[in-house]
Image 1: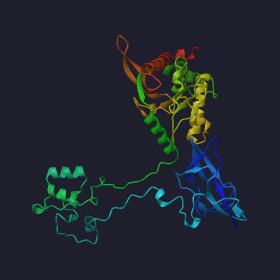
Image 2: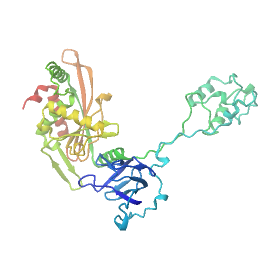
Image 3: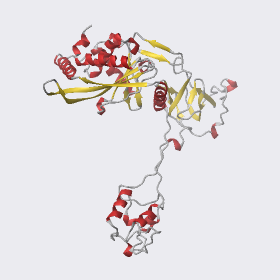
Length: 441
């Protein structure tokens, strides 16, 4: 029998390290060739690491959330034959890793969500057990409950305070005449600490769960912190009448169905917004830029690569529609649908999740009227879509119902002046309110 070391392989061009986000095995497991051992993440792309040999897991070299350098040992296996550790073919880890027997499993109990602590049984609870006598001597310090069925005596103000603080008055002993409960008894009861009996549905919960930020959630946190700390945001909100656009969109979708156009996807608002942004950027190309704030250089791109912020079961990702300037509304719609499905299923590639030059974020389906979106660093602009609502609009002679929507957009004020931001959004507004202009070259 021998031992075989598995090192973290090269998971992408130019990648020097990756974050371990999941173990699929534990010490003592028997694995076969091509069994998935672990998953690592880099630049929002998750890569599975398979075993190249059959064997038994002896040692795991990292914990979930650790950043591991390419080429570092991550798994040691006991294998039939000599393995790859004979005669120094594979060096021991340079970090002074202890023998496998001393190493803890990378999935310690603390990694799973802790169970809420079971409150210690209070004197009140133990006194109400079946073995307790039916008659008790009440004391303001003991908190002993009343016999079953006995109604506590208290004034309306005391009852109100007990209700507001979640106290079951049956568990409070009164120091007044005939066991009447006063405010001082409530105070004494509260002073006894966290093991206080509460009314049904109002029980205290003092559990604390520590959740380590790993994988995509940690990368989102780092990206958002970078954006907020480095970019001075200016947010501009504009109201847009999308009545005509919604009528056109419905007509185009209906025409597609009538002709049996199965090859064409259903049009949403996003493809029209993307085409409007392309036309607006043609007049203001500085909006389609990446700002290298370390070097003080603005990289102004000719190709318009629009990121579409999408919520997935794993968290927020931004698949990118490349070269939107070369796509019509139907092509934009098809690419958005394809990328959204890939992002939700976790099959989107690293290239599909990177390279954006400007981003769209949409919370309209959730009902938001206005937002303050964070720029996708190092871009200089992000356009936010809010919900569409039917509202009365004055047309000069009376109020008429119109479909209205807000665009909430943020800009890097180091690169984009407020005036330029307003001009950009006003151009998009004009195109969306007169959607025929979107199709005019």
